[in-house]
Image 1 (cartoon, rainbow, N blue to C red):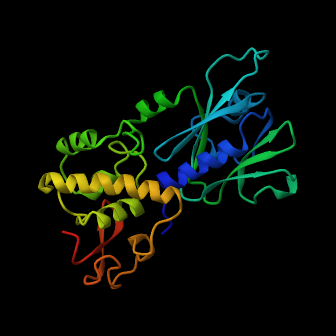
Image 2: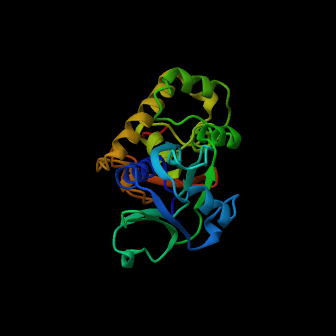
Length: 269
């Protein structure tokens, strides 16, 4: 099964967008497949973005937002943000030769200088739309805090845990509680903090809560550098394999929160 891009992957997309597509006037907006649009018609999507330029990029959890600013001479005054969700197979491609358009491009932005930015998606699990405000969107969708925000302190994490019950992995993957984590990184965080994915939150000691928080922040920051070490579970998701961390246990597979879950039989308790 394909795994949905999680926070580190979407942050990579956001940085790619920011380094390639800012401060260029959008001459044309080409919707190749209307099925990629969510809660907006093609005509409205094109109208709200054409003639503007992307001036800022923001990410929250697995969601990417790009502010589209109108020129001073443009009568359009409403705040406009492009919103992208990458589903399982979404990607971005910036190119200058029109012949380089990706095969599965769903939306293509043509810039005044002749460059292009494509949002591509093989399986159409992603989406594109326009929102007035990322903050309003986050509130309306009930998304939890982003774990890499400076405001996401250990105190805030502990307060979240104190209000919840159930398995710790289920909490980590619930977007309304913490935005951005998915199956792979939830497993990795618990693997590195030595916590069994089925451990219930009310059974966690304070030191274990701290270990989960520290592992979460460390792993996400390391993943942004594409530098997860060889002993990470990320590289060894195979049932029956010897644990790369403790060397004594074996990796086992179960299902938590409807997702295939890997853990060590020895050091995760």
